[in-house]
Length: 204
Image 1 (cartoon, rainbow, N blue to C red):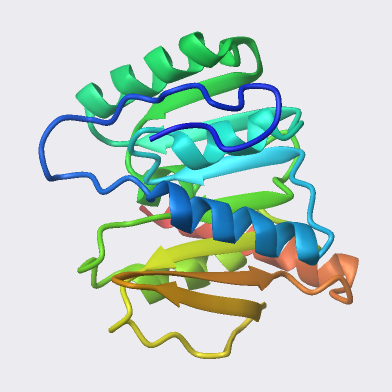
Image 2: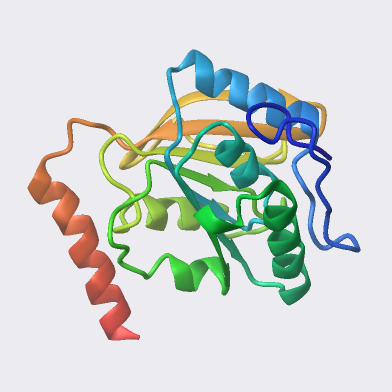
């Protein structure tokens, strides 16, 4: 597993031991970033959920993203991400958060992300609810690009309000889908997502 392009091109990356994480293969990652480039997407503020090795977020940093947050529940995987960030010299423009994705979705950041990648376990039954919650969270804003890594047998709806799917591809046993939070959302509508998120947190 390596960084494909940009400042850290060719750097080898570690992967967490065992079978509990499934890093995105280089050929899948390469096709994803080629598709993003064809859509004119240049990630700047990145959120890598279910980060595993951190390979996708690190790829975005190598391609000139300004900042990346990595969210991973396993302590050993977080240690691998930190090692990979130090190895690629991106540790000063990134942070690793050892917490669940569900918990992180409840946060209200200083500013939203323009690029979010989710690569959850393929058999995670909460994939669709997690996407729906992300789309209504304060972590995203109109124009945010959301990428989901998933198995071929996972059938995603073309529209998952408020997200709208732009492109989807499968390569063997791995697929990715690119969606966007529409730019036409009104400011009041965007604020309502953040308020819904805050109220949900207060009820717990």
